[in-house]
Every structure is written in C-alpha cells, then in structure tokens.
Length: 351
Image (cartoon, rainbow, N blue to C red; front, side, top):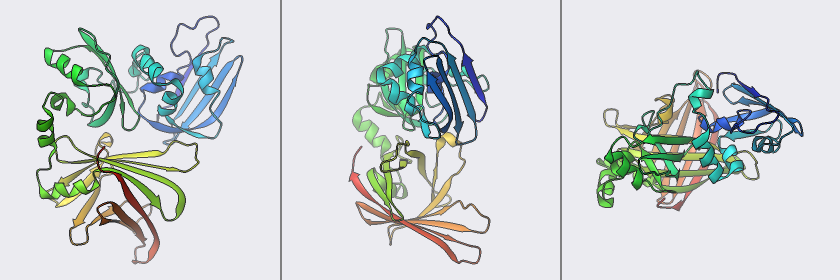
C-alpha cells in the first residue's frame, strides 16, 4: 500500500467485469488499515479515496447509472473512519461471494505490477513465510484445486492449479473446510496420524516447554483504559520449537476493527532467551525476553520512541490462569516516566 494506486474505470452499459473500479481487487492485498479520506456514492456511481496507516493512498472511481455490489459496499463507508482491509470487504460480501471472487478476479500481480508475484499453487503455500490459515473452501477437483484460505491476520490466499503430483492431491484432500493449519508445515504433517503430529509438536527442550503456560485463549484488561478489549490466542508451532501468539486490541463499542499483532516465539539456546517476531516482517521488530522460574515472570525489553529511554515489560503468571503485567518507561537517568499495568485471564486451555 505504500505506492499510490489509482484504479478508475467507467462502465456505461456492461457489468461483465467482476470488479469495475478495482475495489474488490483489494481482496488480494496484504492486510492493512486505512482511513476513508473521501467518499461519495449516488445513482451515477461513486468515488472513494483511502489513506493507509503507512501513508499509502488508493483511489477508486466508477461512473454509471447501473448499480454494482461495489457501489453498495462504498455506500456503507463513512468519511474519516478507519477500516481493516480485506476484512471489511469480506464482512460485506459474505463467505460464498468472497470465495467466488477470489477464484475469478485477476491475480494480484495483474493489478499491482510493482508487487512481486505470490506463489499460488498448493505446494507453494508458506514459501513467503510461515503462517496459520483456515480453509474457507477446498475447491477440490479431479485433476486440480482452487483452494481459498484466510490467514489469522485476515489475509486471503488462493491455492489454485493442477496437482503437481499424487502427493499434492492427497494433501489437498486432507485439508478440510473450516479447519486451521500451519503452513508450510501442514503440507507434510496433514498426512501424519494424529499421534504422530502430537509427538512432532511436543516441545523438545524444558525451556521451550515453559511457553506452554501461554497455550490457550486469554481475555485481557488495561488498567488505564476500562474500554480496552484485548484477546490473546496462543498455539504450539507444528514442529514444537515455540508458539504462535495472536494478540488483538480494540475498544468496547468502537466500530473500528481491532488491531492484530501476530508473532512466533522461539527459544534461542545460544542467547538463553526467547525471541518473538512476526514471520511476515522478515525478522524486523524482533523482541527478546528472559524467563525467571522463581517468580514465574517473562521480562521483555521494548522499543522506545526516544533515544536514552528504556521500556521494560514484565509478565508474571500469578496463577496458571492469570497473567499480571506492567510496562515501566524510564529516562536516561533512571527516572520513571510512566507505568502501565494490565492482566490476562485464561478463557480456554485448548483452541
């Protein structure tokens, strides 16, 4: 979304194009949050302008007296409000239409030539980076598949094309609608027996087993903001080397989609520390934590907005079902600038 995208088409008499103005092609983009800077919709068409949180801008225009689903979608958007894409498109379209469009829209590279092509075959899933995704529709055929998946971050994937081998066909048939898998691990693990998958995912070191304290679903609160709505879900990595952490943050009563932070937490034996990072970010923004068994506390150094400051987060398992945390920010002299506190309560042990 950093590049300025202008997709403007005028259709006076034909609706044969699946996405006349290009709005629905945003189903192909990586998830982003954008503010609606301009929106107008009427009997003669619509105009829409978005500004993403990273500064990128997109503009769409459709001029016609013939109504389209895109026009109906744009009519629901409000100026100066922020929306999460592609999730807001999916909420409008519904599951069946989202799946249909993913299979019929031109590839993302066709609309965004500056964006590298994304592997689209079943056996290519996870080539960019590991991710967790739910199968929306397997799209199985006798000689090919057109599988549509939704990542934990709401990103959509289309794995389509002929089966490259008998093995690929067997794997495709094992990936079930509504089930969530880790890719690329699932391309091997899905053919294993359940006990074999469980053995593979079992932590191999005591230090990794410590992360098992996080496994499950958690509901969080923020002491300084009673309206904060925080949800944390944690799952074992398929190979037992760490965990996935999916953290969403929003506000009660807000119409805005909660922000989502996804990270894998791995144990670095050499550093004797835990490293967490979003695999989609290529290692950028990695955080390092240490564990104190005596106090049952993870301590993490966080980035700071100003040079010389330090921000330290401590997360203590006060019980097996509760985490109390605080983040202390200090200036260069060691003076405490701010202290934020909150907690998590476990709501489920298995997901």
